Structure formats: structure tokens, C-alpha cells
Length: 173
Image 1 (cartoon, helix red, strand yellow):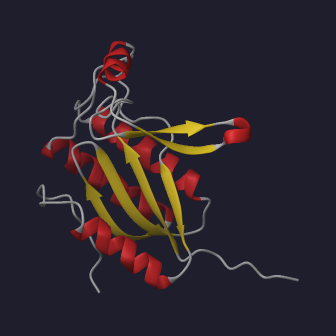
Image 2 (spheres, helix red, strand yellow; image 1 turned 180 degrees about the vertical axis):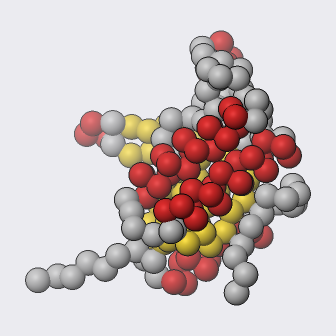
Image 3 (cartoon, one colour; image 1 turned 120 degrees about the vertical axis):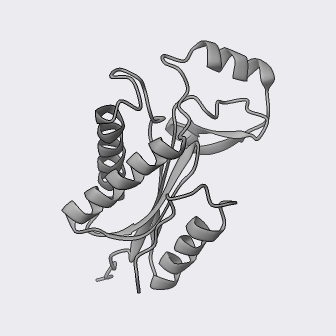
């Protein structure tokens, strides 16, 4: 019998609604379903980006400092409430990176984090009551070893560009 160990943690990423559309000059990805299931890189395509922008259901969301602080507060609160260990957090203008450990599945964790962040933004009147805040889905990478957790946390804290102020977080040793 093969024993499958539990992951040491998860690297969770989710993006804001409408800020990076298919066709973006920086590139984008598309989820494939069925027999071709997976993720495919998409090249820049200004026409597709215009069509995507025209089809948005609400205005794009960019996370300014006040919104980032609200999201950070929600993430820390969800982790504390669920007794998840928050290893690293970095909230950018159009995405959130979280390295966390706790009983999975990570999709449930991601959904809880997105839901509570949305609630906090709405309570603070930082987004509209019906405004879409996040894109569907997100990324949930399993981190199998403590070294993977450390590497992901280092990337989240040091590999995202300049500090945007007040939203990077790592626990005290």
C-alpha cells in the first residue's frame, strides 16, 4: 500500500475582475476542458481584448492601498478563524498571492479567502454591492515539502516587485 502524505502547504493565487483579459499584451491563459483539459498560453490579441472588455458584467477592479489593506485584514482573519498557518501574503493591484498551511482542500481555502475578502470590501463600501471583484477560479498549487513552502513564501514576499505598502505579511519567527 502506498502512503500519500499531506501537503506541507498551498500556494493560492486569485486575480481581480476585468484587469487582465484574454488578449492582453502581457499574455494570458485559457482553461481547456474535455479531452484537451489543461491550461493554454494565449498570445497578445488586441481585438480579443476589446471583445472581452465589451463583455464585462461590471467595471474592472484594481486594488488601491485601502482595498489591499481590507483584503489583507480579511485574509488574516480567515486564517486565524480556521486555524490555518499563513506563511506569506502579498496583495498587488490585480492579484493576491497567499502561502498557507492547513487541512485542505485548497480550493475550499481559496473560496473562503475570496468570499471573505469580498465581504470585507463591501462592508467598507470599497466596491459596489453587486460588483464582481474576482475572476472565476484561481490557482491552488500543492506544496509537498517544507522547502517548497519556503520557496513559495520567498517568491510571494520578494519576487513581486516593489512593496506597495502595508500588504506584505509574513509571520514572526
